Length: 156
Length: 156
DNA sequence: GTTGTGCATTGATGTACATCAAGAAACGAA
DNA sequence: TTCGTTTCTTGATGTACATCAATGCACAAC
Image (tube, rainbow over all chains, first blue to last red):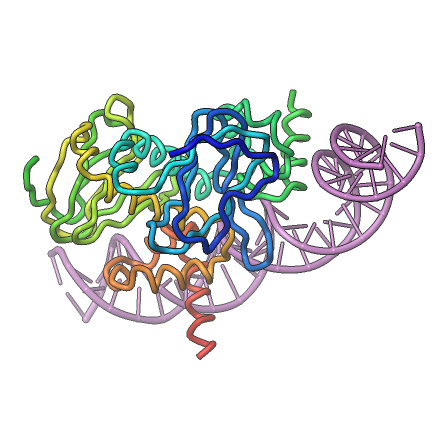
C-alpha cells in the first residue's frame, strides 16, 4: 500500500494486465473503461474523491478494463489480495448496489431517463468531465446526449 | 439460517420489501428481476444450484428486485447482516466480476453477441427456462431472440 | 377427442438511437 | 494574441431492435 500522485491522462492499468491493483482516490478523478472491437470506448466507472476503483478480475487472470486519470490525482494503491478484500465487505456491498442499479437502468430506461438519473446521482461529475465521457458511461453517443440535453432545456 | 423448500412459481421477495434475505440455492432454479414502468420484466439474474441470489440493497432500505422460483427448489435462507457479508468476500468478488462482464456486454455488444456469450457461459440454463426469459436477461424481446437464433441456425 | 393457455415464430411497420458530415464554440499551447 | 485540437451541436440518413398482429405448436384440463 502506497500513496502516489498521478497526472491527468496517465494510464494506470490496461486490458490484459495481470496483477492489477485497487486504487483508492484521495483527490482527483479516475475512470475505468473498456474498448470494443470497433475501437469504441465504454466507460465503466468514474471514481472521484473517496471512491475505490478496480477491475473485478481475480489476481491471476488478465483484466478487462483500462484505468486512467481524468484529473491530477492523489491515490492510494492497494494490492488486490484476499485480506484487502476481506476488510472491505461493506464497500463491496455498496459497489454491488451501484452495479445493480446500473444494469436495471441499461435494460429498462431510455437515454433521457438514464441521463436524468446520472445527473441526480452524480451531480459533481457533470462539471468535471466532457460530455462525450458521460455519454460513454450512459451507453449512448455524444450526439444523442446533446439532443437529450437540448430536449430537457426546451422542456423548461 | 434455515433450509426451505419452495415450489415453482413461488415469490420470495418483491420490490419494496424491507429486510430481504440472501438465498443460497441447493437445488432448483431462482431468478431475480425488475419490472419497469411499462410493466415489462427485466431479468437481472438466474441462480441455479450453488449460486446465491439477493438484492444488493442494504437491510434498512426497500429493495429493487423481485425474486421468484422457476423450478421446485431447495434453498438456504440467510440473513443479510454484516457477518454474513463478511464471511463471503470471495463470493462477492466473483459476483462483481459477473456484473462487470454483464455491463460491458450490455454497452458494447449487439443481440447476437450477447446471446452467444450467454450460451457459452450458462449452457445449463438454456434448456431449463423459456426463451422469453433468456431474452429478458439479455435485454431484448422474445421476437428479437427468435430471429437471432434463426440466423445462427442458417449460418451452419 | 376439444378447448384453452402459454410459447415460439414470422411478417409488416415503427422508433430510438447510431452514424456520418459539417460548422461553431471552447480550450490549450506557443 | 493566433493556431490547432478537441468538444459540442445540428441535420440527413441508416439500422438494430421494438412493437403489433397473425399463425402454429405444444401441452394440460376436461
